[in-house]
Image (cartoon, rainbow, N blue to C red):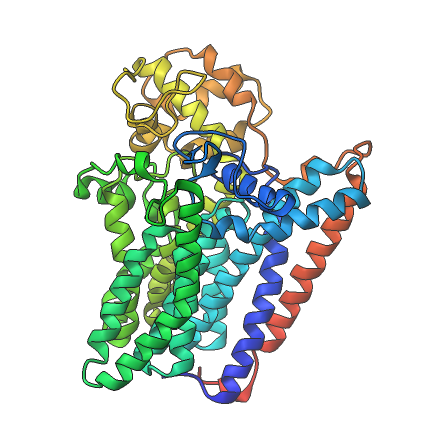
Length: 534
């Protein structure tokens, strides 16, 4: 069932208001860090496209970037996350000329701009999906707010990593898939093809989700072969340009349209599936339920949701299950340096939807409401901790604390080469501590940093999470502890003497206007007689 025409129009206006409001919120609370690691490679591609008109880059960082057949260095990542950052690069060039001396602040803000917008777009798409499930406007809005600030979507919407783009593509694709499952019209089939193309160019692993979804459409409409054939033809027509783009990008980098550049990375596909799934779902350092506690409610609601919204649940399974099983086979299933299981961020909005559509409306007793409120409050607290510090700080503390406490790892057989510091950033030898050991959990680590940032090491060390197990003194860890500072972009310009002050004040004003103005429109769009009963 879908909302009435009037309700659809109101739903669209509300979604626009949500987008404006949350874009302002995510930018207002954004990170102070420029793109690093994986994000740095993707941003460098965007910079090279915008400035030099080429996809070749200068940073060789195996296997994330390596040389192609022509000897130039290329990123192994899909083109989509870099393409969406190109307008930010152009905007950066304009703003640097307008605000001399503010280059670093402008780099940070413009590099985060599109990711904040994508995070807000995910929330707007979620709102529309919740309304399609017959949630009232207020309930759908409440669910959207929880998604925005109570799950790890918040941390990635304020960071320049590509996972927020993947999430946008996955949620949009799922919504389009449900429409085709409901009625395979030409317009819906074309829309599905466009979303499939965006998803494919977000990350090639989602090709498996697209194939599974095509199978689901074929099963759903197997009784009407003519309509099915037309729908698949239109979907294929809309998808084809995006396939050509992906294959052409492969050929330009590696000399073959079917070479994704992930050869070295795919050699790590040797983990036991059960172990990988256990890590992604239940490990102390990467459990999706620890880093997004509201998904516990979603998991409890899933059986009822599957009965009430059968084809939507199957669409979600088609999109989520193939990448989930793929990542479970990956030795670095945890995503290395990140907050929580970043590879599963794309599934977070979809896994939260059952709670909003099928459980929260039935939480009528005081006990059930209190339990849901407690879990949601815990989710918000976890995201506050995650956003307070750039995740690298605690991870480096955890790695060196583990070495000082439990001894040096033998990295001679590691699947990932060691770096200049003698560490292998993506290997089990250096990641198992903050992935598997409770005293080195990032959530506990960030809580410790939150209590002690700015304190001398002698004050902070006795309260460190690992001190529950050992009294070993770790003076060499102090330098990594001292490097941690609160992660907010405003700290780059709040000094009266900083040359970036004018640019910072202007940006702050724009972000506040967007957040408040969009929030006001969001609030005013909710009432309406046709929405009284949801």
